Image (cartoon, rainbow, N blue to C red; front, side):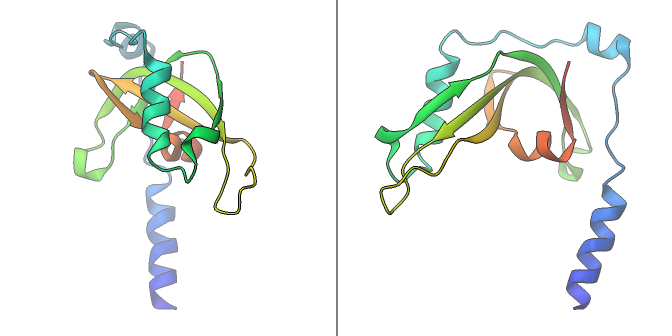
Amino acid sequence: MKKIIFLLVGALLLSGCMATPSLTETTSANYGQLPSDYKEMIQNDISYALKDPDSAKYEFGEPRKAYLQGGIAENFKMYYGWVIPVSVNAKNSYGGYTGFKKRYYMFSNGQIFDATLKFNSGYAKPI
């Protein structure tokens, strides 16, 4: 019980830590280039977590410039890049489709990473 209370208090303390960059910061930031094969890169990353990667159906949204705030280990550093929303539907262990699940992938400084948790919790936003 004490652990749950501790986690809830910690979550409340950290919930207001998202810094919003100024207009000057967002207009002068280096977002880098979006790779031309970004769809294949995202599909490759997602396929490792799927039970039946060949059954996967993808729906890609439009790439947009975005920013993301790093965590405490990164001293809350701001990252700028391209975000691509993608919905994935694939078969589970029982052979049935699970329904489309939305994920967010971000390209920043030449790296791809799954930013779903950051976008869903408000620590990342498209511009």
